[in-house]
Image (cartoon, rainbow, N blue to C red; front, top):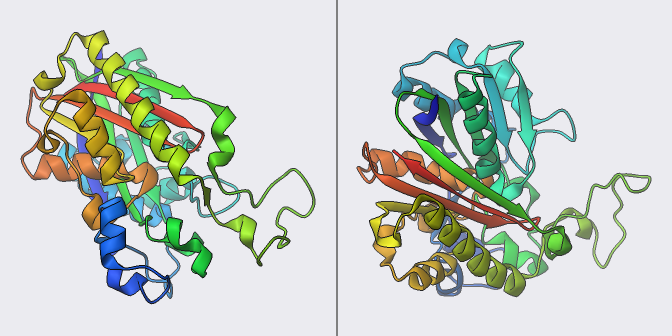
Length: 331
């Protein structure tokens, strides 16, 4: 039995936040942000209306179900990738399960941040190929705007992240779809990109001690190390994935990389000897939506006519953990 993506969907909150708006929060400029990240706008939730990743994922799921010709009751399992769940526990997956009205099916979270969707996709692929479940909903969804540091010190991270959700329904097929997934991690670099608080290593779980109130609650990123490792690791894992399939890089119809920084994508493309137009990018409009970025790209690319039956596709990601991976698909 083969496993393939039967439907995709995405949703971003209506609120658009421009770089100009962020200049009111940070000592920055539109030009500075675009030059270093490629981001022009991002979407944030309305802070006056409590909204979690499961709310965004619900809307994206409706789009995917409609495309696949399925009902929510056809789903057998939910694998939810996120770094921004509604609560310390339980995970976001069960909140989405309740919204969809599908009690009793398994629903669980994957906490691998920017690579979370690929980790979840591998699980779904194996579930379907083994016959464990027939239709698996794979979710990447984030609400990150409520956790950003809006003090002057938060500029580096605060201009990058956006909110959004993307989903893929993985189901059985009589032809190859998801071919292989290749996943990696290296915990030696865990603290190069992380949020230290809250922590279970002491009481209380949250402390406001630090150079400024609440410092540990915000993301800490060694941007230079993250950039260097992202380019190196994604290039390596893409090359490995291509070799496993016997594909030449220029035979791939579309590359979809995690949308962290357009300069990372440009560096990977250059290393592969490919033009940038072989890569689908939307970071200019959405910023870094972490686990949601790849499935949002897939949903948009399909609706833009960039994905058609038989196309060879390579997905790749890198992020906190450090964790990274790649997947090869025939659409």
